[in-house]
Image (cartoon, rainbow, N blue to C red; front, side):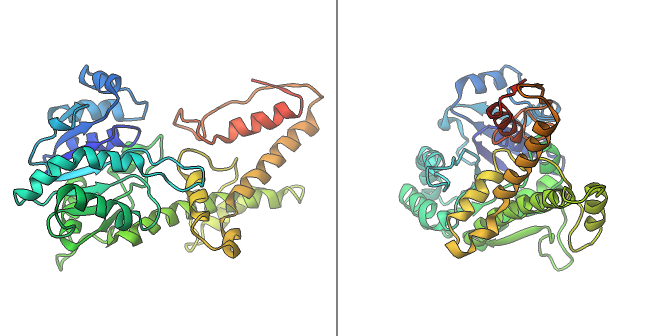
Length: 363
């Protein structure tokens, strides 16, 4: 299948390489990014992104992948366009669609040509968006750009990935689930076949998709993405709440407690352990975005940031109780989690700020 990946950042480049290097099919991939230095590095054989396993994957993918800053270089017969560009948080904590819309506008003339020639291009938005964005923003924009009707002349999909920095390649190649939001059944089938080829997943005896490919409406997929990230942050917060509980009782061992609780199959062990709060470029902002779409009376449901703050207070309080005034304190590790250099919403920096405010010198 011929694919264009628009946006070659921390998720886009690994995604493009995974599709190009897939062993179960021969995808031809065109990677587009407006950062000229970034694309020049890729074309010179260098990898500008630090991510475990990506160096080797990029070399494996090179026979079937090309990189450019020019949308005109995208082959005219491309079947699927994966848009993986930033949707930053606005002042109101809702995701901003400007980069996604700009990518669609740059694709407009090519998509229009494909629609007029009877092709059925599929635009698959991978970037995280607010609920109802595909139906209310992207669909009318694409219909205006192409002159076609969504679901008849072209397809619109919403297919966010569930990956974590530091394990992007492994997560992408071994997912728990593929989420496919579809404007229509034909579009959903195209995206389904794309991932079946990537992962080598066979269909069920009755011909339907593997149960791990979850096809649903665009709106349901948008809500599912936010719901999963909110649940992940909640589970991390529950593990940390256990730690706060154990702080009240001398001798209580939070690791023993969390491990035992995790053996309950209804709960599970993943992410259920004590530590600093969650950070990074996804979970904190997704929780903030979710708070903008729920009624005020349900705001306590998204209390995870409060747990992060409580844990921070306990850690800083314990340190300040045990060191003299104006002590020299070293923090080992600045990223928001092991295995990545990303420091977005890093608890380490937030703890450092609190220690500095308490009068200590922090390295």
